[in-house]
Image 1 (cartoon, rainbow, N blue to C red):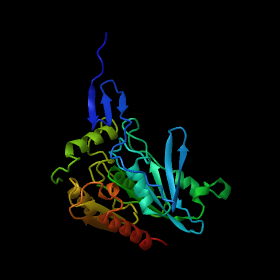
Image 2 (image 1 turned 120 degrees about the horizontal axis):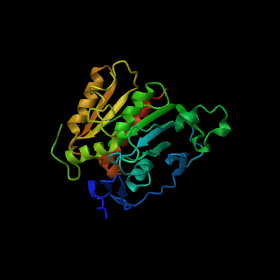
Image 3 (image 1 turned 90 degrees about the vertical axis):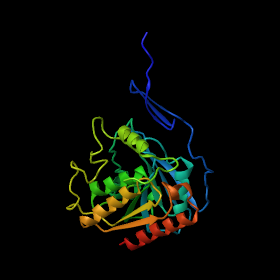
Image 4 (image 1 turned 120 degrees about the vertical axis):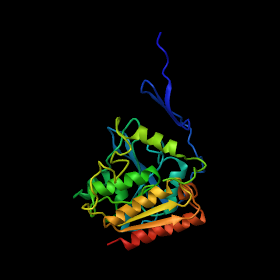
Length: 293
């Protein structure tokens, strides 16, 4: 009689990877919060890739008179391994942002190793026949597309920007060496999520992890649209985030680095109605206004 598989990786009890390659997930939603249902904002869930089971949630103002809306892709956090647009903290943030934002639900590692491409919006934009376009995108401006990522979602936003370059239907900010450990996060846990997310056999110099590493393409010749990088001053990876912004500036990219003193990881996602979150919302609004054609 063979022995039972043992736990190889344990991420807060939310995800366990076993020695036989099997995976278990805790169905309980962490960071529980009341789910906002604001009548001023409508939302719907869309299955845009039936083979992979990829879904996204679309948000837009309920007013039918609102047109020429910008599009914002929001990539939620969760170390690439857990999280969903159905989680109240991510849903509430999108409600808080109040305009027509697209919030994708990316595939989760380790079942799906990075990277994963999101081309659904591009397919919608190139529909010559309006009848083929999702009706929820009626009235949007495909020339004003922005990408926002929180935590691991910031990494996805960066790689989307590099892959599609300036002027395409996707573009980009942020990614979140060492400050004191936060109450929840520590360096060992970050490394664990990376091990579960990148291709088997890869190191932390994989281009997905380190965009300026020895195996990464030079970004000097990659045309990239303006980027705003936001970080909490109390984040454990605060210095790494600043280094990311600094290196982009050094290769000639237009980058704004904004630090919110004393704030920890996910501060505006966890508390979307706080005073500091209001400042982040205004920062995003100004960025969209300044970079709209």
